[in-house]
Length: 357
Image (cartoon, rainbow, N blue to C red; front, side, top):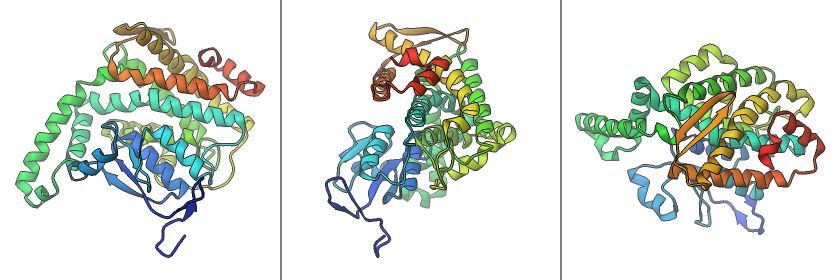
């Protein structure tokens, strides 16, 4: 650390880097807080910039898409999409490790992160925009960040404008539940999946600080981003704190995660991780993402797939195109682990293998 308090590291081209990165994000964006948690763990010098009207010009200068997070590098390059951002930073800042060296654990971490980003987001989004109490909470918090700075000096106008913005956000977002496949026929499957995940993680994290032991991994950052955001909403917060209280230390810890030791072995982790792999990934996530890929490629307007013996049917459209790309990337990543007999056996037992090859 230099005299300014910034960390100074060499990038892979050998250039000295002492300038801060900028993370344009939002507290209610699971992918933004996921990225921020990763940067904090890595001790990467950065500035957290809330995307708002006051930062819009700078955001638009570097963003290719109107989404957060956006990371602006010291070289003034804009990076988007949380996983590629983390992959890029891993090349530049390899320590402390953000994934185990062990191939079995490393791929399972990658798989859990993918599940979190693509399926776990359904959990968070459904609860945030389904019940009125959660709609009101989220829309008002989002509205707060979209107010012009000067308005805060005029309390009455501030309240009126915030209420107007919140009403608009609430109407727009509550009508977008279809984007994550939530409807009257699927909502119970989505909520059951979330409670199953929370129950399994609650048991797993009773004995350790992070998913794979005593330092965080891609799995932690991905799962935490969604669960932390859900925990900030009234309804999920109530049942998380009541029924899954062993998750709370981890939720708080991941706000500023630390390297506190080593990763554990698969043997010590498997009893409580195997059920998540089988029930949430092998029986739910991978069948769904494979089915939606086929439906999109066939230019169908809806998807119908059987998940754990129940039909999961919803309309599809433009926003789901990303799932096709994401599954292809996941399969390509798995290709680099092919030949690992232990991993092959674990994935086969969890009903994951056929859907990854």
